[in-house]
Length: 221
Ligand code: HEM
Image (cartoon, rainbow, N blue to C red; front, side, top):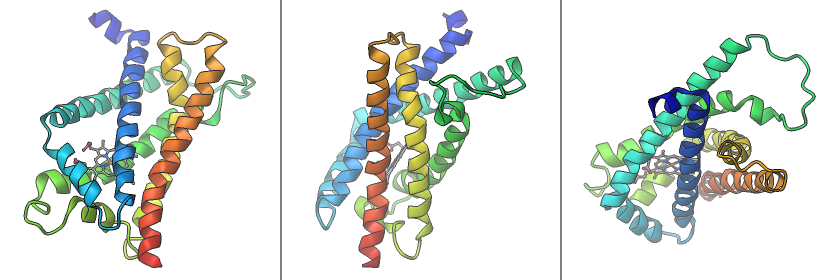
């Protein structure tokens, strides 16, 4: 088992499985966040956010999620360094049609997303879990979410939307790549997976972007 985990294919499988887990997390996270747009006072979002925040299953899932992120990031680092050591000079000409800009820049896109995640955890997760802003009644979950998407903090919506574009590019390649690594790579399935991956990446990037843009517009108009 330890031989598999430390082998190149083992590392790629771990990247794929943790990546697929993160793909599912993003769907759920997007769905819950979009609830903030459903009613004017955010009571639907507050109810769901409160349920998610106080549920034992969600508590366990958060640890699984954290482990998923850590494995995904660590293994990407190891694989990238190993690949660079094996091929220090970049190929000059790229003639393969399946090589896209995203596929060649997955690591750098991942670093951008990691920087966003650090900011995002400080913006929300930290304030929810390690301060008493909500318990003391100073603000609701909805007010916390919308508090950084205002005219005063205009740069947050800008940073968030840029991060969602990077995320979309990362997902566009990683979705089909995860399935390919796990063996679903025959000529029938590959074009379908590419199509579903691109659709998924657009839904995630556009879906998440709607949130900061909507609240910034609401604050400005
Ligand atoms: C406008 C878009 C987004 C909003 C409004 C938002 C909002 C939130 C909120 C309120 C929390 C705290 C939830 C809690 O702990 O109860 C949270 C946590 C988190 N978010 Fe986001 N998020 C957004 C986009 C994203 C994206 C694109 C990613 C991934 C790349 C992401 C990753 C995470 C992670 C890993 C956590 C910590 C785990 C968790 O609490 O579920 N978020 N987010």
